[in-house]
Amino acid sequence: MIPTGIGVITVFFAVSEFVPGGPLDQVETMIVDQANQAEGGDMANFGDEDSTGTVAIDPQMRMQIKRKLGLNHDVLERYLRMLLWYGPDSMVSSKEVEPGAARKLSFRGDSLWVHRAGDAYYVFINACQTNGESSQLTFDKEAGRLVSTLDRSIQFNPQTGRQVNGTQQLTVVPSRVKPESFWELEYLSNGDRVRVRETRDEVYLQESAWAALTNGENWHGLFLFKFPTSITKNKKCYELIRERLRISMRLGVSSFVITYTLCILLGVTKAVRNGTVFDTATSVLVLVGYGIPGFVLAVFLIKAFGPSADSWVSLIPLRGIQSPPEIYNTLTPMGKFWDNVHHMIAPVICLTISSFAGLTMLTKNSVLEQFHQLYAVAARARGLSQRKVLLKHVLRNSLIPLVTGFPARFVMMFFAGSLLIEKIFSLDGLGLLSFTALVERDYPLIISNMFIFTFIGLTCRLLSDIGYVIVDPRISFEGKKS
Image 1: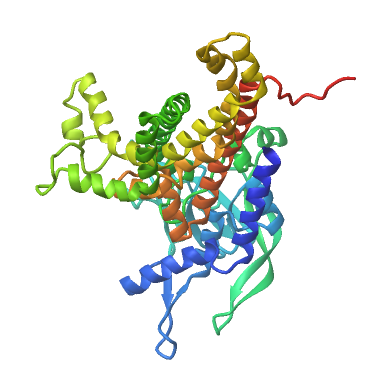
Image 2: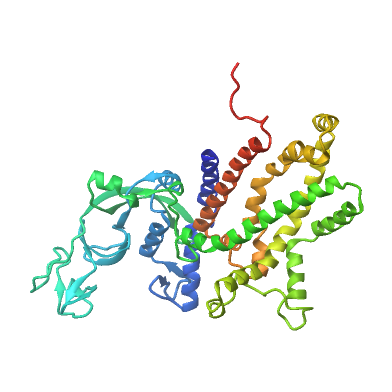
């Protein structure tokens, strides 16, 4: 499982790193488009009258984008940080703060001010006391002072953190400066990009070796479930996945359990009654269901049984996994349970119908094949009833083909099988989230979804291997001793 996961991440990293239109290009394109629409802003600089008038990304802004996307490292370290890596994060670089200037930044949830004096950097917590109240700071460029936002007469020396003509002392954040060299992508005047080697100072939090090693913030990688931040939604990818996992789990697990339960029951019944009217009638219904795509059935259900005025009868809701909060919160516990079931009936039917048909026929054919095996014939010859032969001998061996397709079908319920259904019924699940990430080329969200789906599939494959042993004791993964 682990090598497979590493392989998936490696392939994705290679694609995102060497194919044009990577994460940095996507963010820069978004900023340029927004700046062009708004006719300028703090994030972009317009050309002069002789230029083309297009918007260019400010170098300091580009450096901040790289830092947020984790692109301020060499290729090898970026790759290892996607897998599993120990390495402290820098707070700011010399490229982001000019000599004599100060910059406010956010680092690990804390608001900080960093002041640069030549090659020295001074970092303070963005907080002070103003007339008994806690206030933040701003930087006065003309005076070269950190100033309280509530009272401009309260000023601080940006190098020592001491209050000018006062007794307050800003909280100092211990830091260290480390010169580092990176390969960067830079724009030429004609718009082409070239790789250049650049050396800059990086400012790190000063920690003891043991404190840095035991600090979880210094460990990175998807294998530690440290997910990046989404480009388009500006939110941690694990939070986006967690929000939508609840909906996908309801749909995926419900349709999966119902599909396998019904297909086994109906498939075994059809095998026992092979050639009867029941078998023929159910085969016709099963094949009709198999020929109807789930999204077509979804449109039909909404048109025929939705809440619109021209529907046949109003039985199913139009959208959502539950009623609006103003209605849902007034219901009793039993009413809430039925409301959830009511909203899930149509999506679950659409997810179940196509896979249910194929699995039913597979179950029937597998049971019939096992009935004609020598062990089943011998069991009936010894006087065992057909029921006992079916339950004690045939059924377990008949389940092996079903167990084989277990992983792919389970993952499909979460992504490929639920995408159009989620879109039609306005269900904000993982399938729609993954599709949106692909369309918008949100690379951090894509790799997070790929990582989750990969290991869901691999876990299901592991369960499938365990299922082989459960349904057929003759299968063993242990080496036999002579």
